[in-house]
Length: 302
Image (tube, rainbow, N blue to C red):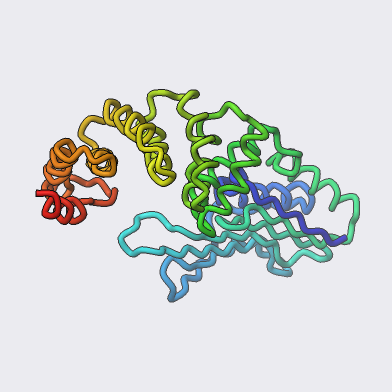
């Protein structure tokens, strides 16, 4: 009986490599009546960084056991942790009995079996589902959590189109969730659909009126559709929640400038220069600096 089960969920991708080995080890002990040693008898290291295979062997008339292969790819040499990995545990040397369990940071869990005894095969699948539980239908909360994770990490893909698709699904599940409304609003803004963005960002402000980030982004969308009074009110609220935020101060100056409030605009453009990350070398903020933009506009106004 051949079968392949693939489960690609955020929860599944967090399974430990030791858990996958322990599962295959348990299967061998239960269904093949063999005991796999705790320490590998042979280790084969490859030339590639963090790329190796170990083989756990049982010796007899025929070699058999579990072989596991791990591959880790580090995107940035300065990173301590790998960004992509695959880890497989595969039995070898057993007649009419083969199981391979793969963990992947991209594809989740993959269980493959090729076992002559159908009852054994079905029992192994049942054990897999019992031990990991990821074959069951996900709860509403689990589905929602994965969507929010995708929105946070991939919402900007295709100029926000992916985030809009995921965000619309998220608010169908929990319409009163702050993050669902907030990320959907951001995605619409990124896609230059600012009226839609405003609807969802306004909804987010009602759910969490203490988030400066949502008021700042709301102000930017108001600015894009020339609702300057509302933009000013939103950015002032954002500033009250994050008094010395460089980006908020710049947008306050910009909005005042658009409203022809020259003196106040100059005041906050100067404040933008004072709070610029370049003025504070120790500042580790990664947000955009508006130093050059503020300098340019000040020359024009003064």
